[in-house]
Image (cartoon, rainbow over the protein chains, first blue to last red):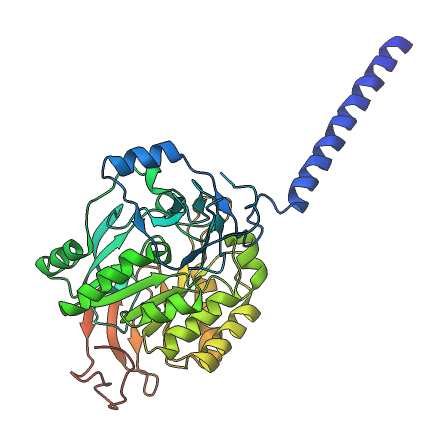
Length: 82
Length: 325
């Protein structure tokens, strides 16, 4: 009987730990902004360059030079985003 | 390392060789920034002017509307995310429509204007500008539907060839812009003022999202700001939110909330405040601010009756109604 009770307590304890762990992870997600945007990143993105070049060569996209930019001479750009 | 800095929008992305700006379509190839969707729209439609929405600019006229992939905002409620949150290389549909073809097609289809819309046309700036110049030469008007997240110098240049804009003011709160759009409020307010200073006919849209930007105090402050900075005659459209993209967990905006927002804006002194995306609501129509008579009756995007005089006045009290009629 005592063995059975101990086993049941251990199972309850595991369950409580699991619930607490879940609550901890959920609160962490909520505090971090629920996956929302976090402000102007001002960075750049990695793109599928091969796909882009293939579609430019096929005439589906273009390589027209844009306006409103200048070449940078210094420092490395930061990490790109997908 | 052939890095470039894009100066079009406030992000000012520093882009290494082979990378794209945050907008996904301005790409550094060979040390030069390329506008990869120039002349390659992915959305082409003919809309009524009311759909933009523009209620005081050539009512019921037809607008040839184009958009390419890409956007410099990343709104969690975006209704065109399949277009705006993708690069050109990811699009299934790419039309070949150079500026002269846009203008010729618009004229052939009996459109009075060309609209740059759906995604944010800021990111395909060069395509907009070149098309707009040709459109003006051919007697067409240019309509720019935007979130206004652009630097002052390019915007001032573009304004010279624009006739009307509807600008989304997404909240009167920087925190909302940061969390919901990955942007900031100040450049948008600056853009609204620039449109006004440059004489572009301007209407403002505010999408009311339950729990995120439906605080009536904020709406009242926004309306007061519009009144003081843009003028009390600036039309303001409160639009109904529908669960979309990353905000499917929120309910649609209630009509009561939209009517409350409209009452707040009118209490703050704005004269033309509309409710959109609610079929059959009386606040879709235009009323005279002096004698309250019905001027333009609308149901959805359709005009039932336009009672304005030919020179754009109230037929009863003769008050001039602001707009381009």
